[in-house]
Length: 174
Image (cartoon, rainbow, N blue to C red; front, side, top):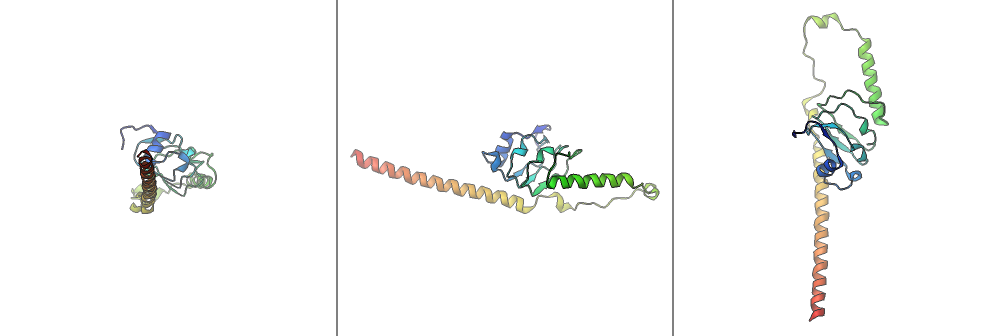
């Protein structure tokens, strides 16, 4: 984890961590355990598909509302206190589900038997659920490999063009 425990997501952070120059070009982002407490301009990453924000200090998620292409989101180990009604689409379904769970918990009385002896609750998440899926890492590697291949091809093309120009300039000057 970084030293900053009150990190706000900025354009510079997004560009640095993703390797992209344009926020709209970011498809995958891994911000696990970096001290994020404010999602800042993350909503501007309109092409975001995979996002890991686990092990941070997030309490609200309303800035994720614009991420309509998001299909993988890891929010494990945050202290989310308010989902907000600003979420739309799939997010509003999540909000409705959380509201129904809260209502259900408020209506059901606590059984007196459960108070007599402490019980160890069964985990509702398996240990594998806390780890990032391989396809997230693989997709980041594939994106990086594709970018590197494009860059090398561009360098090769520029090198060939410069060699050709040098060759013609040397023929013209002799």
